[in-house]
Length: 253
Image (cartoon, rainbow, N blue to C red; front, side, top):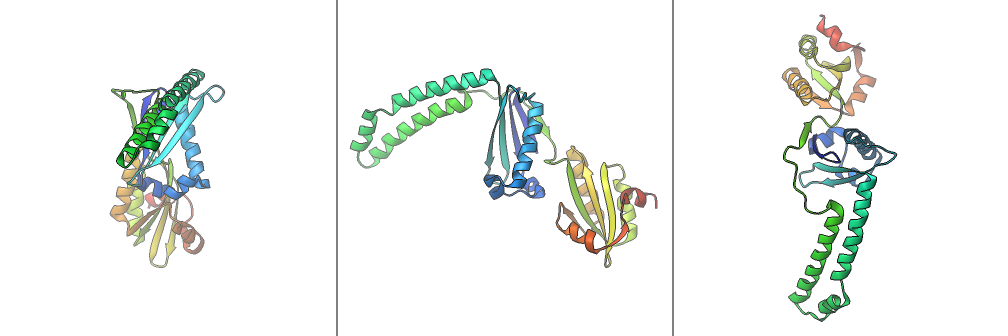
């Protein structure tokens, strides 16, 4: 997840399609505001609000979310104080007056009396003028991007579950030794037939640690799954070998 702090009142956040999939979010669910999507958006709103110094007694947070063509999600969050609200109200009044100046009865009659392509051209001119007025309401007018925006890159979630399939106990021990330095919060080892299944819970806000865990697991594993429903099947049906603190225990063998 890439977070760009545009200024002290606005933040833009981009979440890749792959991260959305890991979170179990879908474009349809985000658009409909389903339970999982709403919970994630509320948490994101809370985190961004903390970065912007949001005061719930006096400020409001405005959020817009847009699904991009590549399946990623772009979220824009803006903090508005009483002064911002007053300024926005003045812009709305100004825009309303501007729209009234554009959408006169004379202009409407001009559309009605036009024929062929001229009808569409005149209507397009009016609609463009209206959209320009509305854009001023939303943005406050033309603005330059900050020269040095604050950019933060981190995983979309702090905690994720990993299911790692391994061929034998020796490989489990080698993998555990390689992962001992990472902030693995909980871990269990199961045996499902001839396959060992190592379940891991990683809690981190650093991309480097997420990458390190995934790269290391793929080096040793036959397969790896992230936040997979298969974990429930393993924990309920497979044979528990080390039911708690498996990484630490394996690392001592």
